[in-house]
Length: 142
Picture (cartoon, rainbow, N blue to C red):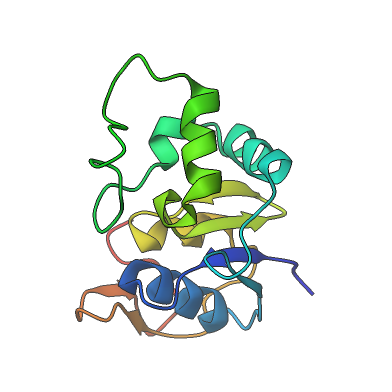
């Protein structure tokens, strides 16, 4: 059994699509609704490092207090950005997926396919109708 963790927001279409692709491979991931159960600071730092991104890369702007908090200011340190994400978990972009193959911010959602060791079991189209996986389980356009 493949152990996959998805830091998920069920209100987010990209997050729902990534979750559905994991399930399309026959894997039931551990789902962390991070707005209800935010990661600890230490875990968040570790996830950022393992994903090979910066705290700024993980910041979500749309639908968050990003502008109100002045988080666009380039002089803010990584620690200050992480402080903001800890105080306002909605600032953490999603979905963040952890698997034996690595950690990635899965935007666009089909990035999750790189993290699933199991083959897709059939066709998959995103909520907007975009075909991502064909009937044979192969990634479309890859």
